[in-house]
Image (cartoon, rainbow, N blue to C red; front, side, top):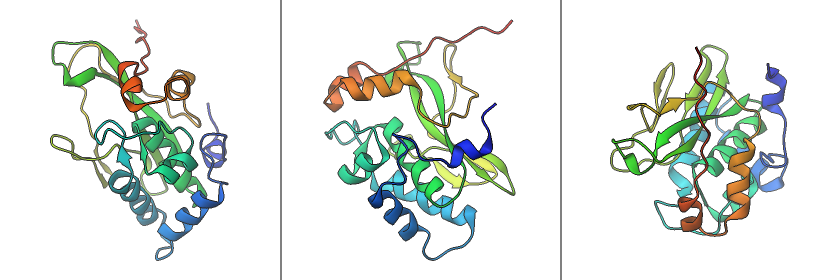
Length: 199
């Protein structure tokens, strides 16, 4: 089990010790001392101000939180890295979660891919999942604890809410964002993991 302290540390990817990330985190929190309110402000900044790479057909492919902030774009994975970094920079425990979803909203099933979101630890609510991928038609993710309003719901067999809260992104995500250099290459090679059937 990951210790709560691990959700407060900088990593190579969740690099909130980078000066620009720290500056933005403090700027977002400048008018509040309340961790829940600061979490909402960080969430809404990443959701609304960082453009989803595929929605906006934007390069470069970003991975580290500092890169996402610098270029103002990222896939859901990269946006979750930035949101985790902004929260941790404000001493709010934050991790990364994944869903397995049907690509292209294909109601008939696969192919499937991972979708990244965040969990933030709020004293009055415990772990609370938030999804800053960016709203669009059919997607309306909000910050309204304890009510969870994510971008996507699990609808069909093969899709799943993966239960883990990761302190750092999983390797298959890092590999895709490192290997491919344009948003369309990433889209053609979105990461996936097989579901493990628990008897």
